[in-house]
Length: 235
Image (cartoon, rainbow, N blue to C red; front, side):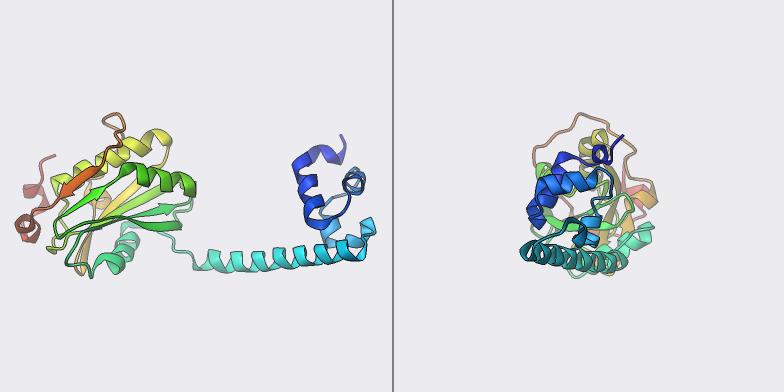
């Protein structure tokens, strides 16, 4: 089997477009050699001055990208526990006392953040979440999982019935797509709670996915109470 079979025609076309090396030279060299040698040892294809300059610039770009990618990987936020995600969202939402904000962290398969997005911002006790928007962002990020979070301006970290219902709606959408909803963090001032840690996170779909906007509100008096969660919720 020739070495060419390992590489697609698109690969050779891309190498041709980026370096200016003729296709016939690239394909001829790749029959018995690793085509990446053209980048690492460009003189193997006897490039002209302009082609050599393009190869040099491409190699500089690849080197810079590799270094930046390594630095980014080292600095990426990775969640290994509800405590990690709770502290993260508390730092983002803890100071919100005059409005409710709903955020989503989209994660890769190592639970590292690809992107965190504010998907809704409402008044002091109400916000509207658009599931289609969350789905669109999740697909564009090619994420493996996500973590939901929103704040209670009243200060309570107890998940309300509306919080539970909203979480189930989101799970109903993503579970069939094999995208996990890992947690829903409730932030109240300097405190936070994890629905997963408390056992309130849905395990799977209960209903068919619905994409109409979700209006959720939290009663201020209830949110400011210190009732135990078991007395406050009806499962």
